[in-house]
Image (cartoon, rainbow, N blue to C red):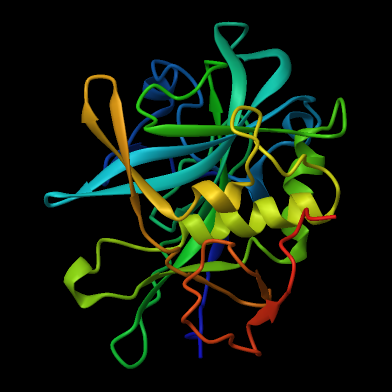
Length: 291
């Protein structure tokens, strides 16, 4: 059973939180410091994303990116989605350019930086740890506006899929989460991982892809290798040389949702030896996207 989560949202007309994320550190900054910040290079909870940004139109290529993280000497990956905008957009009086957007499920930290020019909402710290040695931490559905329109530089692997609808807005893409995908928890399933390694980003992206395919919004096979994401996702991609990346097979570590049932089918990247949990999972006999 998931722990009870009590989340506080503070509303204020006079004060608000401004914090910059740098690794695992969060530094309080002033309004003046924000102006020197290269603009919007931070995670933005989707709930606080302005209407005008949600209405920006997207290009047709979805990148699924596997970026390296390290736990001691063990290489892990963080998986996220990135889409170019149909045209660049600007902020800070035209000084800052936004060419693409990363859509992500992030481990809840505190505080998230809410741009003062957009909102005076601020989230409190929410941690969730409970029950039988299993540790949970709430996720937050975020976007990050990016100044580039190609694969992220430190990405170890990137697979591209084509959106079927031209001129889809960011709002329409994010609305896929209305299937209750956005109420997510990360989990530390293995004691040897330590409480700082939170599993679930593979699971979230895999189910987001699945919902896009089932809604007929995404071509299920990637542009280069003509394979579904399910073929690529049960791997950690490790850079083993200047121009060499070695995939290491690893079944998807599952997170958890408040009220969404995970779609589980053959060859979808999950460990086939794990029994289906009827309260939280739906078994399908055919991979989504198969005719």
